[in-house]
Amino acid sequence: SKQQASAIETGVTNAYKQHEQTLLAALRSSEQSLSAAIQAREKALEAILSTTEANTRALVLSGWKWLAGSLLAVILAASGALWWTGQTVAENFQLIEQQKATMARAQALGMDFHRDENGQFI
Image (cartoon, rainbow, N blue to C red; front, top):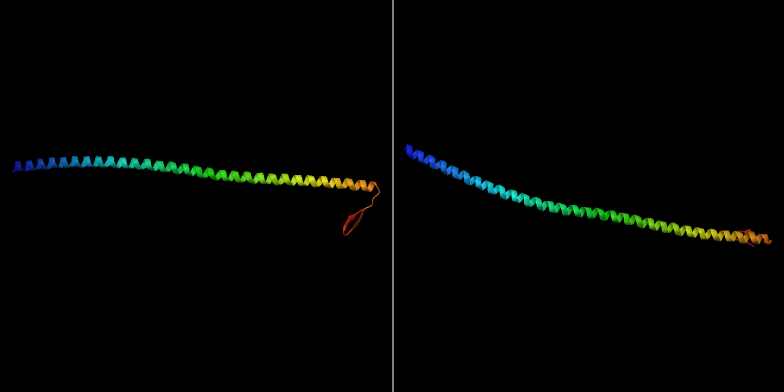
């Protein structure tokens, strides 16, 4: 019975060691597959993050382009309006000067000007 108990104990110990080795191999395999899955997921997330970052940069740059373009359009429109106003003022100033010169010549020739509620007349 001692021999039988020793044989059973040896058999159980061997079976336990074999089971332990099988579990360790399964754990290593599981660790490797989990590690590979994590690395694959990290690569996929890095690609998504990179794409998102590029899209965000393009969107921000597009916003700045619109802002700069709009600002440039406003500046050009304001410059054009100021130039047109300046030209109109200069033309009106020349017309007034011509009218003043004409009135001064008319007075030098002895013409009198009469002013009433309807305006000024020679």
